[in-house]
Length: 393
View 1 (spheres, helix red, strand yellow):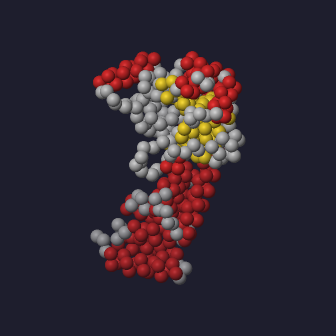
View 2: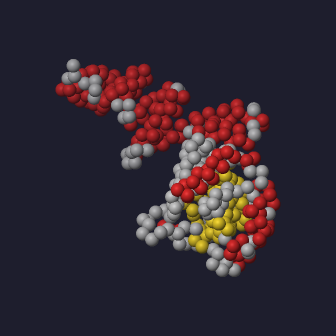
View 3: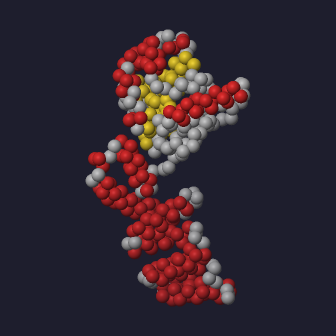
């Protein structure tokens, strides 16, 4: 039966013993206190502390386990257990324990300085263990990595990074149409798009047509972000109506912009020949995207995972980068890549001159021909059933 009065008296005796530097006497007093009120978590933590000072790691661990049995989420008990396991050299358990401490600490923004210092020491220890673990795994996998194709390499590397806690898992977030069960890939493997070679081969002609447009835009260039009046402030407010991120559309929602395509005949002819997603009133979209010096496109997600977004780098100052999920790339002039824009992505131009890319959309390569045809039928039926609707592709 619990005896809080005895527990309080014994705890006071234990504190007095600690002040006197008598760890052995403190252990006995705290043991009596915890036994008198076994649901009082601080008493078990006090006992663990005294056991540590007395050099009895086994008893310290038993006391901390009792504390965690009272409250598995207690920060102090978890911190002391992680430190104990680290001292005992139980590296696997210590790494897991420190991970738990870090998760709890993330919810405690105002840690006192000495506790924050202890947490920092744990982070350094954990980082060293993870680095050693990652190196061993990398060496083991390296024996067979030469035989991996592009898909296997990206997926296995992502698996290892996720398992090692070095990679965040991103999921599709669609503002419009979501197609279930498609792989949630950040960048698509190039093998899905053999026609990227042809696109890249026309880089010089496309860039020249863009430069001619920019010399005399004649109203063809507009802000990419144009929000409706009354839209609440958001991360996009700074770009609203701004040419810091500007676009010049050759195709928009499946409609050709003759004012631009007539001035870019080689680019227009190429786009006509490519296997782009063609959905009446929705796709393709194809446009020149210009990002002014020192401009940032904030993290965001797109409309539908049924499509792929292609970037062809046209004019790229040094240092410009593009992140999709976990992977950040720098554009390489004349080269193209494909990505899923329903995965969180952002871009930055830190340079002193404008960055320009051609952006086009194609089908998600994981959709079969039958699924693509079914999607066309779906949108056609939806448009016929509800006139004036705007079901996003």
